[in-house]
Length: 295
Image (cartoon, rainbow, N blue to C red):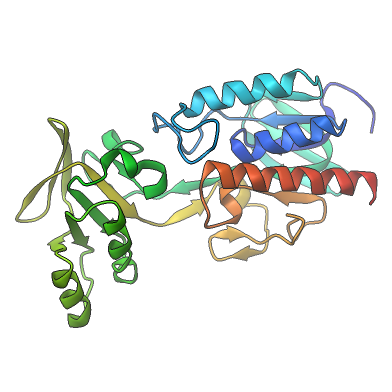
């Protein structure tokens, strides 16, 4: 492949922890890459990221800026603020169309993360990523021992509420509309002091917390943990990849069902934390490098 402006060894789609880790690994291996970053990270609403040694409490934007600066010094990776629209071609001859041009590469890494499908409840977007969240490890410590709500999207997820007692003993579970809670589960909730309410109809900021309203009650809470569906980005969903439920199916080397096309990060695993995404991205970067080297 000729060394022209828009031809690189690897196109990395997504500039979060997974994509950045892969870019760093490939750079240190002397391989060229382009990181296509549309600038809409999944954790954009979060003020801090947690659970990442050395970066605990750092703003996600600051983490990305530091990582980019470290990668830039190798002069092997380009960071381009473009959105990938589709990927065509085959191993060694991929073509990636973006909203600003076209890139050609021998390998492709999908590191686009997932999209959270939130319910259309008034006020939820205003607190999402702060007082409303999915991961208690990422956000729970800041609200420990304060009143929480837990809102799952179906009855199968109700029992996750017991795990949240590790962070707070003052918990209200908002049961999804139409869900049937077995009496045995009701009894366990009562025994653990967990209150049951119908699902929220509105949420608003209130003093040092949030005010969550259900059909007939209002609750002053510090935080709202949630478990709702996720989906792949339109790009990833449109590639015709084999899937494991919501997640892209990959082999032990993070390669998808399309030879030469790899995936890493939240799009491939239920372990959705920045540290885990970076680890998977580094693993993918190594596998891609070996693939390019023919070993």
